[in-house]
Image 1 (cartoon, rainbow, N blue to C red):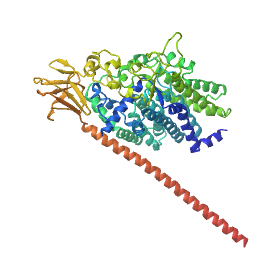
Image 2: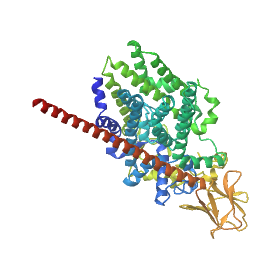
Image 3: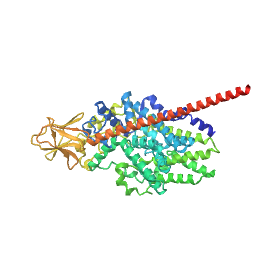
Image 4: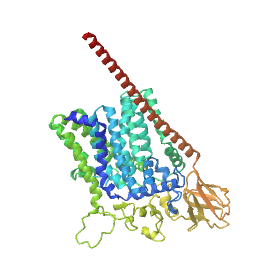
Length: 632
C-alpha cells in the first residue's frame, strides 16, 4: 500500500491537489462568506498595510515614516522596525481587488499552500524519501501551534485571526531554512544555498523575533559542525557568502533599521514577564489533556506504539528527548530565562515566538514514526494526517465560525456587550467594540471602521478629552528610551514645547509635511512632538532649511530663529537609498539567475531525451535491418 501511496505522491497533480485542498478546506467558509473573524492584533496589521497603500498612491514605494494615519502618528518610524516588503503580494492583491478582506483570505490560502509545497520539496531533496517528506509537511503545517489564549491555536488559525501575522508566516517555512543550512553544514550539499538565502532574507523582513531564533539555531549548527570537523576554510567561506547574500537581499530593511537603531538609545519593546519561564504544566500538560496540543498527543501515541512494537531505537529516543527538552526550554524555568530576559525582551517579547523549534522536531518524529510503524499497519499513513486535518478544522472553525453561535450566559437579557473577557462571541467592528480585545467580524463593508481608526475622536476611543490620544499602529512601541514613561502625552497629543512649556493645537499634517504653526516671534528653539530619526529636516516658510537635531528627551528640536511657521519633512538618508539599490539589484539578480538555471536544466533534460530518442530510433533501424538480412 505504501508503494501505491508513494506513486500517487510522486504525481505532480495529486501532490498539489492535496496541498491546495487543505487551505481551501480551512478557509472556504470565509471565502464564500467574504468575511473574516479577526483578533485585536488585526487592527494593527490592517491599518499599517493601509498606510503603506496610501503611501504608494502618493508614489512612495519604499516606506519610511508614517504620514497618512493621523496627526498623532505622523513621523512615527514604524516601518524602520516592522517592515512590509515581504508582504508585497498581499499589498498587490489588496490594490488589485479593492477588497482587503478577500486579499487576506487569498493570501492566507497561498501561504499555507506554498509552505506545504516548499517544505515537502526541500526535505525530499535532502532525504530522497517521498513519503517521509510528504507526512512531515502535512503534520507540521496542520499541527505546529504558537501563542497562548486560544485553544487549538495553530498557525493557520492565527493567520485567519491576523494575530502575530508575520511571525506565523515565518513559522510555516522555518523548516526550509533549517533543513537547507543543515544540508550545507553537515552534508556539504551547496545546492541548498538558494533556499537558505531566499527564505532567510524573507524571514528577516517578516519577523525579527522568529529570525532571532533561527539565527541561534544556525549558529548552534555551525558550532556542532566545527566540533564534528565538518567545518573547513572552504565551508566557512561558503557560509560567509550565504550571509552576505542574505544581507544584500534584506539590505532594504537591515541597513535603515541599524542606522536608526544605532543612532539612538531605544526603549525595549513591551513584553509579558509572566510568559517567560511559564508553568510547564499550564502551557504543555494542560493543553495535552484538553486536546489543544494535538502534536504532543501524536508524539506520545507514536512513542508508545514504537515501544510496543519494539521499534524504539536510539534515533527515535534522541528525537523524542529533543522534543521534550525544547518544550522545557521554552515553557519552564529549567532554562534560567530571568538571566537573559532583559537582554532578549526587546527582540523576543515572549518565548513562544520560538515555538517552531519543538514543532519541527515533533513533526519529524511523528513522520518517521509513522513510516516505521506502517510496515505492519499501513492505515497509519492515512490515519494521522487525517486526524491532524480534523483537529485543524476544529481549531479553525472553533476559534472563528463558532463565534457566530455563542453560548449566552444564563439570565442574560439582550445582546452581549463587548468586553475583554469575551472570546466565544464575535462583534461587528464599531467605535465601542474596537475598544476591547474581542473577535471581530470583518467584511468589505465594515472594514472602514478599522482602516479609519486613527482618525477617530477621543469620544470614539472612549477616553477623556484631556487623555493622551490612541493609535492603532502601536505608536508606544518604537520610542527612544524614557519617552513612553515620561512624555507619552507629548507625541500622543502633538504638544509643541518652547520656553519651557508645552502648547497644544499648534500642529497640522498634510501628507509628507508636518507643520508647527503660529509661533511667537521671540522663540528661538522649538521641540516638535516627533521622535527623532535620521533624515528629518526642518524649513521655514520660505523654504530655507533650519538647524534641527535630537534633544536630550529624544525629540526633534529646531532652531526656529523667530519664524512663525516650521515645516518638517523626512528625506531618506544616503544609506537608506543605497540599501534600496542593493536589495533591488540583488533580488533581480537572484530571480533571473534561478530562472536561467531552471531554463538550463530543462534544456539539458530535453537534450538527453533527444539523444535517448535518437539512440532508440537507431537501435530500432538496426534491429529491422538485421531481421531483413536474416529473412534473405
